[in-house]
Length: 335
Image 1 (cartoon, rainbow, N blue to C red):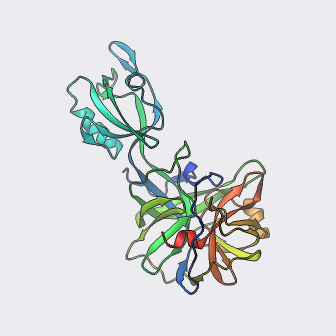
Image 2: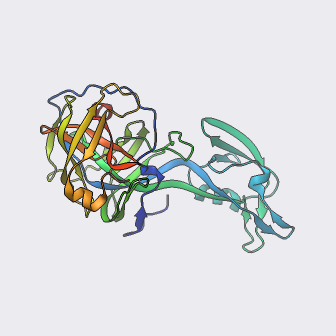
Image 3: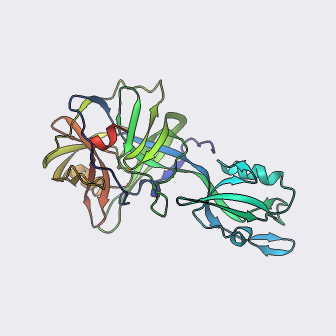
């Protein structure tokens, strides 16, 4: 995985898309009385995708003219290369390693396409300018973005986002580990009717604060580093006793420190199968002025009612950025 550069500006990617739809389990029951550390802080995520994903197909200029090996092999954008010439592929560098020792002839690729695994033969060609063999593809081996940590358990397990990270085709993205970094929010693109806003931020440094190991319907989960400082975080009970009425969310739209913002819970549906247990309306004037409501990157912002953690913000209504969905904390806590 390419080393993270200090102060590198990260734009929120599809990874944190606030209006994406996912298949969610029925809300679980949170045991009242259990305590966790309250989140609300932004985090920079760099997640491995378990191979090299094709993000573009291009032609290669060779001594014999323009050729397109990937197109000839019927490779598609979105495919993930997991094996090349008998070598397991986890990063872009793995493909470069195979090509550097290539001796000629067709070589077999194993691809993941959605839930299928496919095998195809490809004939690498030599690029006339560089003298290197190429497949005619543009690839990535990780995705990066900004999200919000919802809670940290006392055993240092964390939960974030409240919804899955999905690929462009809407399928659950296979995450092969990942690193979480402190993040500072430096700008907010305000949400408007018909267009979701977004947080923009910087990874503060290249020292990771946590490792991610699970991407599922209710978010990204993992373990904080042993030396992560919990002393400034508030302990809070979890509860499944949500009801319509006043509540607050904790989110960060400037810097690194979460702030409390007032909301109204308009609707509660504990048994919703799509992770939409609450309809939440932002009422806080400061948040409305700054962000227009819910924006991309706020997914995972904890929802607190009557002094207890009841859930997290997950999605925004595109036609009304002051409103969005939340998931019940019971959906996340057992993960």
